[in-house]
Amino acid sequence: MEFQYLINTDSMSETELCRLMTTYGDDVRRYAYAITRNQEQAKDIAQEVFLKAFHHVGSFRGNSSFKTWLFAIARNLAINEMRSSYVRRIVLFEWVHPQANERSAESDYFAEQSVQELRGIILSLPAKLREALILTLEHELTMAEAASLMGVSEGTVKSRLHRARKIINKKWKEAER
Image 1 (cartoon, rainbow, N blue to C red):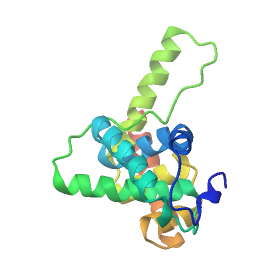
Image 2 (cartoon, helix red, strand yellow; image 1 turned 180 degrees about the vertical axis):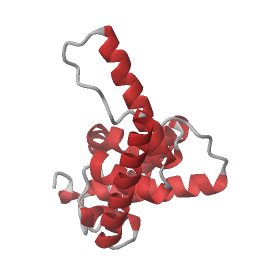
Image 3 (cartoon, rainbow, N blue to C red; image 1 turned 45 degrees about the vertical axis):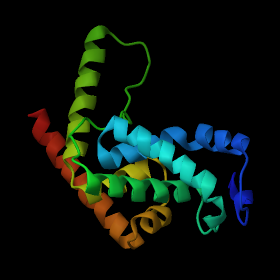
Image 4 (tube, helix red, strand yellow; image 1 turned 135 degrees about the vertical axis):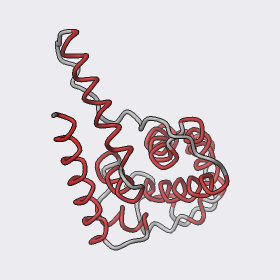
């Protein structure tokens, strides 16, 4: 729990803010992107998350990890953003990367095609299923952390993950035909 010492703190230094941004910036931006599906909105939301954390660090109670607290802020900001503006459909963030071993141009091409297909499948998932998948796989939150962040029970998160995987497997098999 790297930033747990910020519990019961009313302020943080700019240096501490920089450390937070370095540690969690990419994760927060990718999570915001997973919700909004818009790179520019995700960048704006990520910046706003860290500004809110900087100004409201005193509201961090330590009931969860600092990362989970930042994700909760990001989620709320992203949902508010989506409610107030039209969200364009854009390809999901790059969280699936082919291995960088020695490959031929042909294998690189087919690997990229597979990644694009998988991105499309994930993007087509209902928002609640996609969010559960992204929080647990990409951002490595525990079931309890994801459930707390999403405001649902752990069982609901497990159910959403199961349904997401089932849909992905079905669509992947259909795409192979």
